[in-house]
Amino acid sequence: MTSTLDASLQSFALETLQRQLMLIAGRNVRDGAVLVADNATGEILAYVGNNGVQASAPHVDGIAAPRQAGSTLKPFLYALAFEKRLLTAASLLDDSPVNLVTPSGLYVPQNYDRDFKGLVSARVALASSLNVPAVRTLMLVNADRFVDRCRI
Image (cartoon, rainbow, N blue to C red):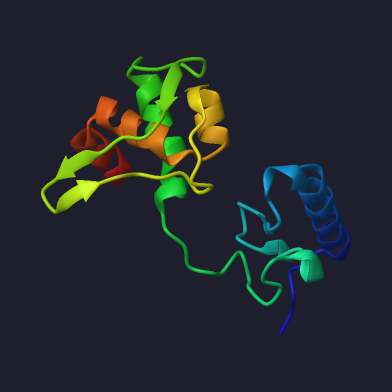
């Protein structure tokens, strides 16, 4: 079997991941992964599943591990809000506790760190992957409209 990995790019990806994680270690970030693909051919040029022994779970492949799709969808949600001119990157969003009544019961969204930041820009909310501002943005955009957008 022939590998499409590029040794120098593989080393660069690992070194870059480790350097970036060191820079943001104070923000409670310890894990990361890197996948570099050639869009034209689909070949995988670099594959770093985690940052090695420094990872909180060094045996977990951060690229292949299943995870919830929520944070993956956030850029598309904010893009729709920007496109519809409901928000700009500088718009302030409320990152404070909210209780929402749903057909299946009460929904109380939380951020990953279980902390609230108060007013944050849409730019910061997206970059920080904050859940509460994303839920508020979904309410602003309209869930059905967002689902329709995701089907495109």
